[in-house]
Amino acid sequence: MSAANFYTASVYAKAILMLDAPEKEIKNTVSEVIEIANHDISKLEFNFIANLPISKLTKNFLQVLFTQNKQSLIQIIGKVLKQKFLLQQNINLVKVCSFKSLTQNEQEEIKTILQNHFKQDVILEQEIDTKLIGGFTLLINDYLIDFSTLSKIVKIKSCIL
Image 1 (cartoon, rainbow, N blue to C red):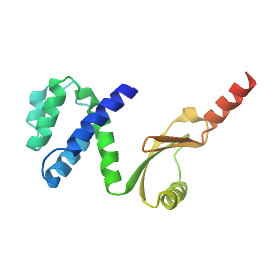
Image 2 (cartoon, one colour):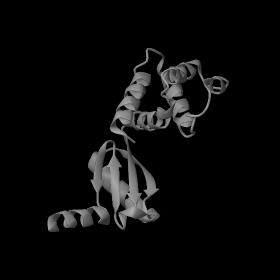
Image 3 (cartoon, rainbow, N blue to C red):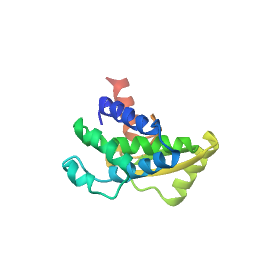
Image 4 (spheres, one colour):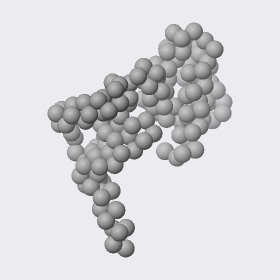
């Protein structure tokens, strides 16, 4: 994901959250956009989207995306919305990327440490990346903490060369 796409998606997400509409409608739109973001709509026609059983507010938002040829951003917008919505609820969304699947105990240990540190609830999303060789990374909001073996190797290599 490019920085420009992330920024643009963040602007669209913020626009949804700042709409002059009842809070219930905004929450509904956020939920619908997050759900739609789970699917690749970039190759679909707006007419197909318009026939989905979604709110008028969501349809209007999607129509703006399609009109501006920005429908490919929907997945990023969904992630940003989910993150911002959870932060409003005092919940941190943390992406854990590791070389192998973490055990339930490892996940609970990471979650407990983060909850104690942030004094907020934490939701962990796990992703596997074998390129890390070992260890893990944490993406907390926009902050990356890297405990991977790969990053250690890169640091050692840069010191040697």
